[in-house]
Length: 80
Image 1 (cartoon, rainbow, N blue to C red):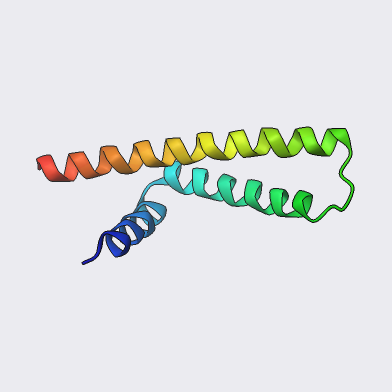
Image 2 (image 1 turned 90 degrees about the horizontal axis):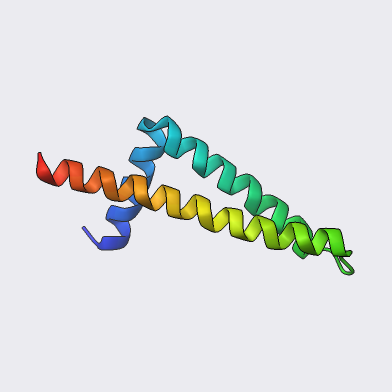
């Protein structure tokens, strides 16, 4: 199995079996949807620009948290 396929399988498994991971993924998706809305604005105001910057940072934090859960899962399954 390729690394990409195994990463996708791990992600799918965690979404199905880990409530915290699933919540992070859903929040990440909501942020992504809002960022898409903001990106489509032709003339965003300062508040919208700030919101975009904050959402990007929050999205990165969520991604880090998801990666940490995945890494812990990998090491716990390898050690057993």
